[in-house]
Amino acid sequence: MNVEKKVRVRFAPSPTGGLHIGGVRTALFNYLLAKKHQGDFILRIEDTDQTRYVKGAEEYIIEALKWAGIEPNEGVGFGDGAYAPYRQSERKQLGIYQKYAEKLIAAGSAYYAFDTEEELDAMRKKLEAAKVISPQYNHITRMNMRNSLTLSGDEVKKMLNSGTSYVIRLKVPRNEEIRFLDIIRGWMLVNSSAIDDKVLLKSDGMPTYHLAHIVDDIEMKISHVIRGEEWLPSAPAHVLIYKYLGLEKEMPQMAHLPLILKPDGKGKLSKRDTSGLPMFPLNWHDERTGERYIGYREIGFFPEAFINMLVLLGWNPGNNQEILSKGEMIQMFSLEKVHKAGAKFDPEKTKWFNQQYLRKKDKYELAKMLEPILKENNIDLSQEYTAQVCELIKEKAHFVKDIWEMGKYLFIEPSVYDEKIIQKKWTPESKKMIEQLLTELQNTHPFTAENIHHTFETFAQQKEKIDYPLLRVIVTGHASGPSLANILEILGIQKIEQRINNAINKLIGV
RNA sequence: GGCCCGUUCGUCUAGGGGUUAGGACGCAUCCCUUUCACGGAUGAAACACGGGUUCGAUUCCCGUACGGGCUACCA
Image 1 (tube, chains in turn cyan, yellow):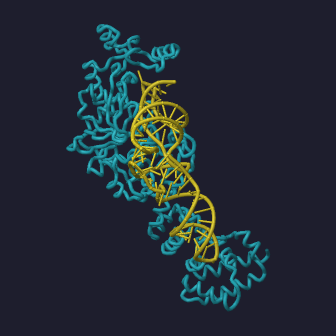
Image 2 (cartoon, chains in turn cyan, green; image 1 turned 90 degrees about the horizontal axis):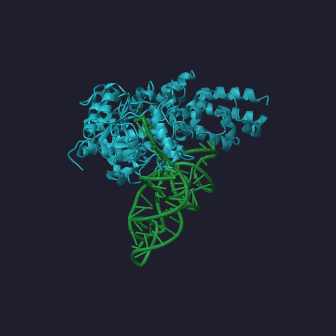
Image 3 (spheres, helix red, strand yellow; image 1 turned 90 degrees about the vertical axis):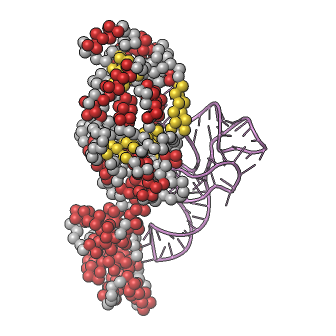
């Protein structure tokens, strides 16, 4: 390992849709490694497949990274560094990839192939019919195809000049051991015979991922390639390309992250998964397909909780700490501690993380976050009042919106009353008890939870037993909730009076 | 099918040749609380299987099973 080399990592998504949480985790791990080593974190857009380009995806990726707090310091949307442009379609215009592809051809490590789609199809069908175990364009089959290895030099020249459509393929050798080190998995050993002659440059002049990412990683001086495990099978081909380019020494270190798996069932997490929590950081609307997906931001996740949950999917700090600030993550992060096995996504635990962060929030902070919901419901109360409600309800909530849902009765007078309690507890005598108690409450000064509690006690001692569940239902409508004295304190005596009177009027006929 | 990767409680994981195999989520019971929640306590719950290596394997090696990934002019 070259210790002199500055850590430069990149997140390189293709703009083919909304960034799903697996992608965010990959970005996060890249970010953490960069920050830990005071390195650079780059966003590169890999838009080499024009047929799959989705409008808005790039903006989505940028916004998602910003929201999650894992911002690149270089690249598309984050300011050009010394290696612009950072969009592969733009880099293609500069002829960067063509140059490398031709270099490989000149070295005899790649070749032109003129086969049409139909010819390729026919070849595969033929191989399948012949029960060839893995039908692919490789060191054997290429000799039966139309390419610069089988055609004469003159023919090739003629076809090239006449504008015949072609691709450039990697000439993968027969029976050669390819070895490389993966930081997470250790040494990998693969025989080249298992690798096909990958297309490097497509007929539209665009590079494939295989060529493009290597060229860019080299030119952008990337030190570590951190990507998902789905890339592991093609990594040996990539090693070969570095070698043929004479860039073995400059090859970045590799780290293949374990996949995030579906919570139930099998397979890797997909955007369509409906296990209860979103698969996207932000709302995503695909204009082309019309599909809509909700995001973590929109259902009320805190970005800190979101990345905390993600970082622990496949990594842990080596102790029992689970709530980690971004600073702590950076400090403790290391690729060596990344797990090898895939991690099943657990929605329950994910919610728990948000709950932990919610509890740590200050009541005024929460009140501010609750404001939009209150506004929506035309509720206009002082911030102090809202803050008190937040303080009281937050222990029960997972999300800010839970405070609204669970504490609604603190904002709005109840119109319905828990039926079970009413049926069981409400009697003509209840009215008297409640009214007497109200009088005592009116004489409670100052109107604090402590004094209210004291009023209850003396009332119960000197007058009669208090039916707490009934009182609670009359004031809040609900059979359960936080301490009644606390609720009463927040509501204040005026609201209590009003609620009790209204409730009695409604219930009297029951 | 072929190639590659993986396998510790239901889930996320710690650990690692000799441990009562630890923590967290979830679950259950109890305590606290006039209720729910929070908090506290307790409990049920795991080294996939078979062979080696070894005095001793959950830990190392090899197989098998199972799971996953890849197998495009997609990334």
